[in-house]
Image (cartoon, rainbow, N blue to C red; front, top):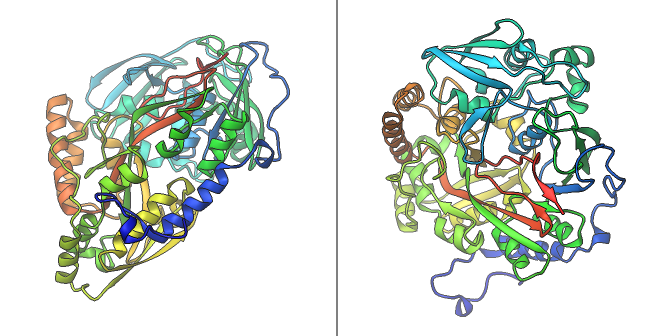
Amino acid sequence: MNGSPPQSARMPGRCYFGSRRSRYLISVLAAATLTAGTLSSCSPSTSAPTAECGNGKTLTVSVAEEPSSLDGNYDTYVIPAQISANLYDGLFTMDQNLKPIPNLATKYTQPNPTTYRLELRRGVKFHDGSPFTAADVVNSFDRISNDKKLASKQTSYVSNIASTTADGDYAVTFKLKEADASFIKALASLLFITPKKAIQAAGNAKFATRPVGTGPFKIAEWVKGDHLTMDANCSYWRGEPTVSRVVWRFVSEPATALASLQSGQTDMVPYISTDLAQSLKSRDGFKVASVPGVRAQFLAMNPTTGAARDPRVRMALNYAINRKAITKDLLKDGGVPTGQLASKPVFGFSPNTDPYPYDPAKAKQLLSEAGYGSGLTLTIYNDRPVVNLIWQAVADQLEAVGVKVKLKFDQNYFADTFLKKKMGANTLYLQGCSSLTLDADFCMGLTFDSKRRGLYFNSPETDRLITKARGESDPKARQATYEQLMQKLHDAAPVVFLYSTVDTYAMADQVRFTPRSDQKLWLWNADKS
C-alpha cells in the first residue's frame, strides 16, 4: 500500500496508476473505517417531522456538494437542481420513461416553429399560500434573463427565448429566436417557476435561503455546511408526499458518505462509486441499484492558446488516456469509455463515434511532430473531491507519455475562472456535462455553441450543425445531423473525452426509490418503511 505494486507483482492486462492513486486509496480506506461517532458532530433534524401528513418517516439523503443558493432560477449545478426539483415545479416534467409530460402547464400548442402557447394549471398554490399564475412564469424567465443583481447562471438555458408574455392569468406564450426541437424538454428538466410577489417582498438574497415554491416539500431549516431539511407540503397539488421529511446531508468524501449509510445516519447515497458500493452487496440491510447515466466526463481545454492550438496535441492527449483501465479497474464498470459528449440514454448519441483507442506510442509521436517531444507541462484543475481518483489517474497516464502534470484543486474554478473565459494556456479542467434534458442539444449548447456557452471551442461548421439539429423537427433527420456533428467534434478533439457515467445508488433496505437516468432525485413518492 506504500506505492505501485512491484513489476513482478503486477497482473497482466491490468493498469496501475502510480503513487497518486495509492496515497488517495489509503485515505479512502481510512475514511471507510469511520464510525457513527466520527461523522458530523451535528445530528440533523432528529426531532419528529412537523408536517401533518405523510407516513411520519424522515428520509435522509447524502449529497456530495452543498448549494450556494436555493433560488430555483440561479444555479446550473446538478445537485442544486436535484434539491430544487423537490421545492419547485417546472411547466413540464419527465415521467419515469423519461418523456416530457405536463406539470404546471396542462397542454401546449405550437402555431409555428418558434411559438409555443401554454395553458397553465389552475388551483396550484405556493408554499406561502399565494396562487400560481402566469405572472409568476413571466417573472421567472425575466429574472434569469434580465435581473443583473441575481446574475443567474441559467442565462444560456433561456438565450433562445425572444419573449415570454402572459395571456390572462392562466396562459403564456413563448416566442423563440430560432426553432428548437428540445424546448419542451428544457421546460421539463431545467427551469423552475418561482413566485413573483414573494421574491419582490423578500429580495433575491433572502429568497435564496428561504425559498418558496409549489413543490412537494418546503424548507424547514438550512444549517450551512451540514444539512438541509424539508418538510412535506401537505397541500401539494399532486397529493401528499409519502414521507413526512427529507434531510439532505452534505458529505463531500465518498467513503464518509458510505460510512454514514452503514452507521444509519443516512438512508441513501446517490452516485456512489461502484467500487465502494460493492462492499455493501454482501451486507444485510443494504441494496445497490445502477442505471445508465447522462453525464459525460471530460477534460476541457482552451484550444485558442498554448499547445492546445495544435490539433495534434489535442489528439495526442486523447490517445494517451486508457479509458478502459479507468472505467474497469478504477471505476469498477462505473463508466463507459466515450468519444462524444452524449451517452446512450440521450437523444443524439452516435453509435458510430468510437472512443479514441489507448495508443501511447501514437500520443508520443503526435507530441513530437507538434514540437513537444522534449516535454510539455500542463496544469489540471479539479473542483470536485468525488472525482479525485480520476483526476490523479489521468495525470499519471499523461506523464507516462512525457507530459509533466501539475494538479491543482480549486472549488471555485468553474465560476471564477472557467465561466469568465479566463482558462489559460496549457490548462486542463476535469469537467462533466449532464444532459439533463435527455437531448444532445443541452451539452452542445453548454460546451461548443458560440451562441450560447461555447466559450473555448466553436467553429462555423460545428455551429451550423448544432443549429441545424436544434431546429429540425423530424427525429430521424435530427439524429443524422447529430451523428455527423459528434464525429466532427471527435476528430477535432476540442476536449479530452473520458467516459459516460453509470449512476449507482446505495440505499438502506427500507428505502423505496427507483433511480432515473436523468439524475432527477424526485422524492415525492419515495418511501421508507
